[in-house]
Structure formats: structure tokens, C-alpha cells
Image (cartoon, rainbow, N blue to C red; front, side):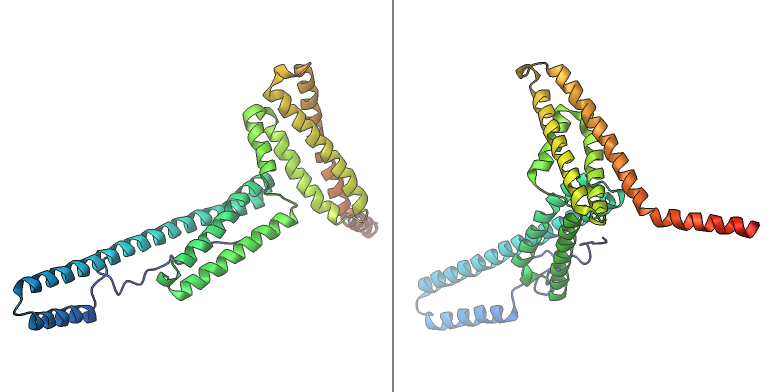
Length: 289
């Protein structure tokens, strides 16, 4: 999966702004102000005090509008910068996803995906809010890339039977807090579990193997949940040390059992290899004779 958001950053339309980012008055605005001022001078030349008051009022209104435009432009600039920052963060997350997928570190893939998917939605919303201030071609490419990445991540999660639910991430956090000694076994089991599921999908006796594997995974989840509860509050349970030791041994053995299951499934994939190898070796013997 080679998805990257960081192409062109959204650009402001700068032709209407000075070098310091402030909006420049247009010629039409200046001409209008000049015309109104001259007209007022002509109409109120006999009433000097009233004329000064009116000119002062117009000046206040003009600078008030100018100040509002400057503040609005600053707000837009801040929104654009925030959007750029969020795009860079999402781009780094997509690189992480590619790395974890290549390393087959599926639990970490799910954790990053859980953070990335809402972030993609947020970027889409932010892009819509400043759409008028982004070049149309840049906006279209950005939205298309966001959709492409989201669809790719969701498809990969489905293929790997991964969940981005809070429950799975909660287990990892509890392991780190209460049972770091089981964290490696847990990650190994999760990784093997997902690889085994993909292997089972291709097996002729898929339903039977899947049912057996699901039963074993449910038992593992029950034991792990009990281990975490006892480890968090050992004084609240009978024979806590003995039960923790037994559960730890069972979990570590289950990790080894899954390794063996995976080896057997891999060996099944090599059936054609073995047949061809034996035939080639027999042919070599005959040629030698």
C-alpha cells in the first residue's frame, strides 16, 4: 500500500494581499471613498462641523471594515496552516502503516489505523471549510487521495480481520500497565492468529478449521482477561500467585501451539513443491543411471 497525502500543500490566492498578508484595498474601493468624500464636501460646505462629523464617521466605518478583513484573513491563514500540519501528520501515519504491514505487525497496524481514520475525516472537513482559498486542482487531488487512503486502510483491515475497536487497544494498555511480561506473547499470538485466518480461508476444510481455531482463541481471551483482573488486584482473589503462574504458562504454550499450527498450514502449501521435488530428484537419479 503506497499511499501518501503530502503532495502540494494548499495555496492561498495571494494576488489580493500585500507581502505582510493583509488584504489590499482595491482601486474601486479607493475611488468610491474619494467620490463619496467629494460629494459630502460639496453638499455640506456650509455646515463645517457636520461635515467633519460625517467624514469621521465614514473614516471609522472604513477602517472598521478594513480591520475586519485583516482579522478574517489571519483566521484563514491559521486554518490553512492547521490543515497543512494535519496533512503532514496523516502522511507520517500512512508510512507507519506500510511499515507495520510489511513487518506483519498487525496489532500495531490496527492501533495506527484507529487514529488515522478519524484524522482523515477531520482533514476532509477542514478542507471543505477553506475550499474557497485553495486552488481547485489541489483541492480535488487532496479529496481524492483522502478517499483512496481511507478505502485502502479499511479494505486491509477487513482482509486481515482486524478491528479498530477500543476493546482490543484497551487490552494492550492493560498489558503494559499490569502484565508487561505477557506483551510479547500477546503480540505473537495476535500476529499468528491473523496469518492463520488468511491461511484457513484457502483451505478446503475451511469451516472446520475456522471453528476449531475460534474456540481456541476464545479460551485464550478468557484466560488473558482473568490474568489481567488478578494481576491488577491480586489481594482480591484466592491463590492469586499460583493461578497467575498457571495462566502465564498456558498463554506462553498457546503461543508455541499457534507457531506449530502455522508451520503445518505452511507445509500444506508446499505439497506441490514436495511432489515436484521428488519427481525431479527421481529424474536426476535415472539420468545418472
